Length: 476
Image (cartoon, rainbow, N blue to C red; front, top):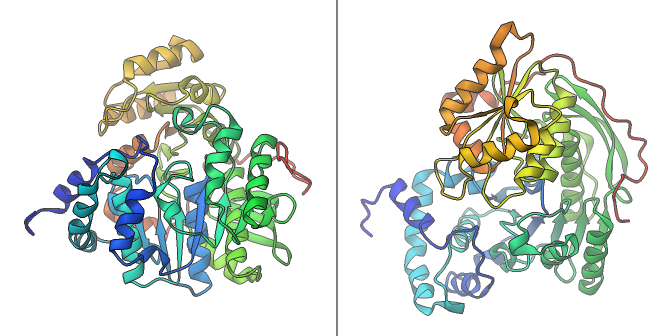
């Protein structure tokens, strides 16, 4: 292609490849490309993260902690909210368009060589190419450590070409069952594939069937195991201005009075998991409280319990399965006192839609169902409206196909009749939240958000009691 090709044209051409939601299970293509590139995935050690929910936030917090400890970081994440560049970050910042385009031009001839081979009958997928671009960017920087977020599953994910020094498994539940398996044990078996020989496996609390599979894999690999609720974890948390105050169990015992600028028990647990992952990476060397706080202070979690507007408050959260939706609903209930609360919901067609709607059924006073514009994978608004009406009743459901119109309708519903503390939550899928965020957050607002705290609206409810004992549902 000519050098005059624009960034938008490059990203569109890349995304026209085999899509990431369709699995072509093989490491053959990514390994072939990385070999042609000189094995950039071996240029720096890695913390590798998989699980059903919490991968992205755990990766972001781990990245911030590593930088606070003085290390230069590369972070690969997926999917993106608004721009493909978000997937490749160096020292906490996404690479710019110029560097992204240059990476593609450097890799393009090698990608063509692998395409010609059609390894396992498929040309290189979009996710494989973007993963290789990330490895190349990190090797060129160079970075001291890479934080890798799995795209889908684990064993056959392109990121698994790397051998993570630390393998982090966030909580496992059912999702992508048509690809990963119909039981929690089957899903866990696929995700356990990132635990490599001699690594340290840092395991969040799991259902018994998942825990059994993960511990068996760790034993086979000779991996050292760190278990949430046994070796590390969240001890206490209290809602506070701009987030919550945590006390965690770390490498050398409890560390308290840590302010995390994020709401919700699930994000607090993910932060404790990230601390454990970084300390495992450092050879079980404890991070000082000052370093942990410096890392937490730098944390920004776009699309995860993110307040993007006030008056009325509009909250974005990308929870896209029942497990994630339940966690987010609990966090909203705890941190905010909305009256009324209106949901804006758009989901992918292959998700457990009934489960997602049920997770919000007690919290949403009404819901505006809509659909995403950037992919045909989204469930049509009319169909989603029928499903939602079956759960919530038709009087609580409004069908508005366009996202911008849906947000406008939700705001009007929330502010009707002089509501005391109106609130709107946009949720249901990463793509939906990305589209909403593009509408609601300007580049200038993005820059200001780095320096402005997020304040609660109304009175925070008291957190659930937590006595430091073994958390419910953990398989240890």
